Length: 75
Image (cartoon, rainbow, N blue to C red; front, side):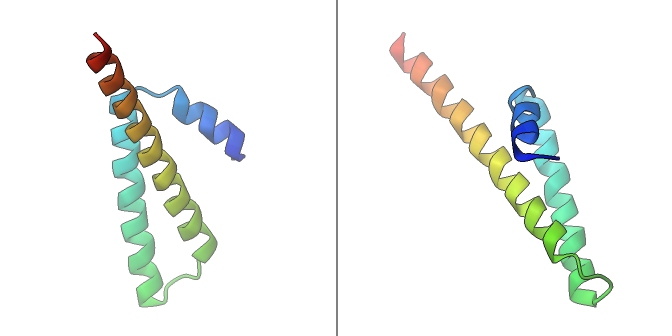
């Protein structure tokens, strides 16, 4: 998936969906790291992609949280 398409997909998700997706990506990262440590696979590229996806998810959740706090304080 291209970066722009992924960002659009993530922006369209609800906060709960973002949390669920982050949990899924964390689980995937755990499994990939485990397989890499056992030498079962050489998926460094996939590992890197999952790390970036997790970072995007966390950034988006933080941005939404800060925006929500700003609107709450502005009232």
